[in-house]
Length: 208
Image 1 (cartoon, rainbow, N blue to C red):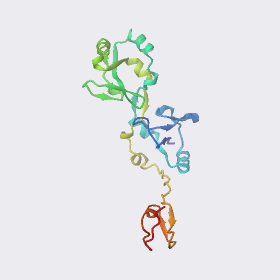
Image 2 (tube, rainbow, N blue to C red):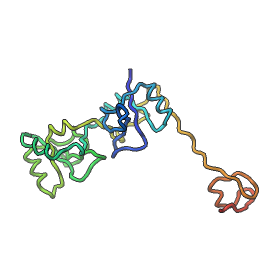
Image 3 (cartoon, rainbow, N blue to C red):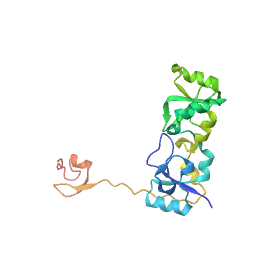
Image 4 (cartoon, one colour):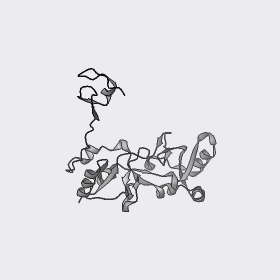
């Protein structure tokens, strides 16, 4: 049976999709902590609130990035593990994607995906981080691996593509209808904008 997760499409954290978390624990960017639903359960919730979007879990897992949340990087732990580390990663000291670290790649670029981050020799990484001009910090490779979790960048996934062949039909949001009022002179219906113009029928002014 296919599993689904529910995105709260009202907002992202950085460019990371937000999902309903397990056990009613709010929302999460961590795909591992997202509540699993059957197709029927996911569709039912979407009908209740159209901003809750069902995604097939298998589709997202294939496109996930492995990222490190800066909130869980403890300086004491970094210092302790650097003593025995052979490889380490460098990340921008004052830049984040939501809460996620922005790593340096081997060609001088930047990435949020730990799998694309350069594993520098620890001596080189520590020396680069020690120079304030570089504006980078260091994290041991093995520590970064332990802290990494799967997240879904908004730009890598397409909802229509994900739902193709699943039979999921999304709820349609209610159509917006502009508020309408009546002309003070002839009683014809006018829009809110027309209240500040002359009536299209009798040309009377309806301005407050």
